[in-house]
Every structure is written in C-alpha cells, then in structure tokens.
Image (tube, rainbow, N blue to C red; front, side, top):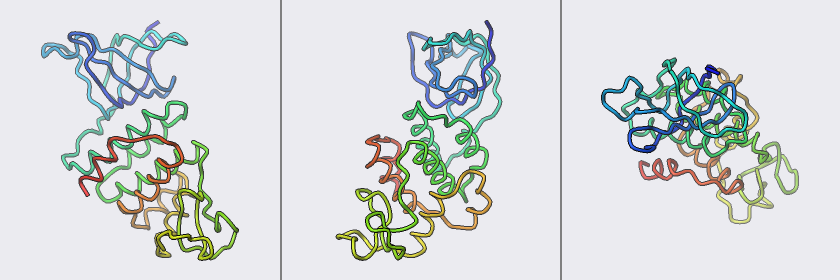
Length: 232
C-alpha cells in the first residue's frame, strides 16, 4: 500500500472524462500505466508533463497493468527546450523506450536526459540507440567486414549486419573513414564512455545510419523519426 515509485513520463493521453493516462518507465518496476484522476481539470492540483521524473504514490501489485496515482512530487523537469529539433530528438528517445518494454532502459534514459544539450544532442541520441541495439541483440559487426572478416572496410550494410570491405560492397555507398570510425566507437562504447565520445562530432547523418540499421533489423517504426526527417 502507498508504494513510492520514481518514474519518467514517456507519454500521456486522455482517459475517461477528466483523467489522464500516463505511460511511464519506473526505476523500481519498469513500464507502468498510471491514471491521474481529474488531471485534465483546470482546478486540479495534479498536472503532469511528459519528459519529467516524478515520485508517484501507487498501490503496487505484481501483474496489475493500470494504477491510480494517489500522490505525486516532481523530481526533475526535462521538458524545457523551445527548439523543435531538440524536442523531436527527445521524443525519439521516449518513443524508443516506450516501444521496447522488455529492455531495462531507465538508467540509460535518465543519463541521456541529464546530460542533454544542444551541443551533444546527436551524440547522446546515438549513444542511447547504440545502448538499445546491443541489448536488443542485433549488434552490428564493426571490427571487420561482416562477410569475410577483412579489416579494411569502406561501407556499412543493414542487410549484411555491419561493415563491408571493397570486395563485398555490392552497390553500397562508400563511407568516409571518419564516419566508419564514429560508427565503430559508438557501437563499442557504453554510457561510461561519454567524456571520451564527446571529442567526436556526431551529426544527424550519423544517427540516420544507426536508426536505419535498427529499424531494418528490429522492424520497429518510430513516428518521431519521420518528423525529424521532415525537419531535415
């Protein structure tokens, strides 16, 4: 009774007449659905925002899917960017988390939002996606050609599952050494390597390579990604 949970709000939607349904990922119990009673009313004391961490009070019971919120306290607000591109990047991270409920992404999610700013937005997006790719079980081959094992590589293939050498490029775009290096570093790296990876300039194009690989090998569509492509 009256269990306290620390949870990041990934999305919210209307629920019944005046309630809100929050999809959250909690530190203690993973993904949960929470109902904010009368949260849509102007007079309500309970107003919730996405991309925020709250301490919620619920009556947790294993196997139950939806919980009523008995109390809440805002712990951290990450929803402060006015830049549509930065907001869209944050939405991609939230949507990736929401659509991969079997993977524990809470710590990675909080790490990314804690360090997020305009200068490192695409680096952190790539780091989060790399973290997910590895735990999803679709890690690409980035030490050599995915087909023959030759060390001299010139491209990256979604179908082959990693780097390709000149003998197996088969119409793939030839990539720069810098791009291939950044792909390898982000796949090999973990969150603890953030300070090292900050030395490299990760861009929208670097993210697209990883995202297209993830979509191709997971068959998961991310609506926020489509919006980001329109912005670019």
